[in-house]
Length: 264
Ligand SMILES: CN(C)C(=N)NCCC[C@H](N)C(=O)O
Image (tube, rainbow, N blue to C red; front, side, top):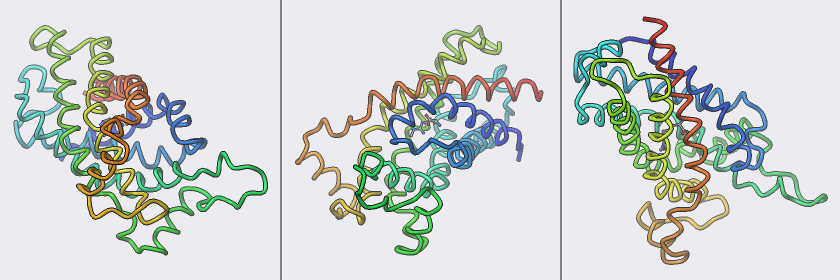
C-alpha cells in the first residue's frame, strides 16, 4: 500500500489547519489557542482521509496518483473512494471531535470572575473525564452521526475537486497551482454546505448526556430540533463553515499535490 499519500495528507492537513486557525479560534472560543492538539488530531485525520482515498482509487482503477492525470478515473470511482475515505476518517475523528464539541460548548471562557471553574481543563482532561464517566464507548458518542455526515460529503468533496480541475486543465496535463487552489477551496465549501445540517445534529447528539436533553436517536434529534427551532436550525454555522473551508482546503490540496509531485 503506497504510504506517501498518508504523509502528504498529514502535512497538508497541518498546513490547512494553520490557515483555519483564526476561524477555529472564533468558532471554538479559544479552544485552538494551542496548536498541538489540532495538529495531533486534524492532521492525522486528514492523513487517513487522503491516504485511504488514494489507495481506494488505486484498488478501483489500478492507477497510481501520478498516472491519474493521463488516465483520469470516472467520477463514480472518485465518489466511492471519497466515501470510503470519509467513512474511515469519521471513526478516527470521532473522539477528537467529541472533545472539541464538549470544550466548545463550555461557556466558562465568558464566565464572570468568581464563577465555578470549567468542567474540563483542556483536551486531555476532557478525554479522561469522559472515559471515567462513560467508558471507552463514551468517547465515540455521536460517531454514527459523524459517519453519516462524512461518508457522502467526502465523496462530494473529491468529485467537486476533480471536476473543477478537469474543467480548467487541458486533457492529460497537470492542473496549475491556481486551478488547484480554486478547485480545493470550492471543494471545501461544497462539502461543508452539504455537511452542515448533519453537523448541527451531530453536535447536539455529542452534547446529549451532559447538559442538554437526551435524544431517542438521530431522527428524534432532527425532528425535535426542527420542531422547536424551525428548519433554519440545520444551517447554523453555515457562513463560518464556508468562510473557513475555502482557505483551509485550497492550501490543503495545493500542498498535497505539490508534495506528491515533488516526491515523484
Ligand atoms: C465534513 N466535511 C464537509 C469535511 N470534512 N470536508 C472535508 C474538509 C476537510 C478539511 N480538513 C476541513 O476541515 O475543512
